[in-house]
Image (tube, rainbow over the protein chains, first blue to last red):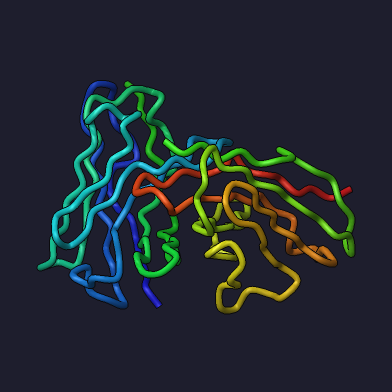
Length: 121
Length: 107
């Protein structure tokens, strides 16, 4: 079973860049079975898919985030990362990393525990 | 983007009740529909994928049905641990989208 764990600052200033890392154990992020993705949830609200990346370099980003998203893989560390630029208070949320099992009927089988990121000066 | 609409947004039910949650997609997603359960302070947990396949370890009182644009999640004989928020999600398009959630509360 895959295990994922987010890490990164819990507080980011407006206009700066949010940076999070997800450490993966139980499989390699070079596996061709998964897209590695990020999902967020503003406090008390629903889930929003931010984007994901495949080992080949293919990425899918939510256009609502207006090209502020960069997702990258570090195969040497078995980690993947999220950068979200020019943050505002609307980006305050719990950020989850997740494995999107991309075979047959794709589904998110494994999630990190989530990390709260607050945007505030 | 494919829009996912769940109903109801919340419901009150008692232990032992049968609960039905519906999810509608803005276009056909064939059977690329997943259901997740989320409890307060926890990450979502996959219940059903491919509209009707039960994820390993999920109790058989959970079931899913539907295809195209209309789907349902049914919980037969609601248990105390089932009070939670439920989300549908489409995996037909590369940009995954979720329903807004249905909160199942104790009557």
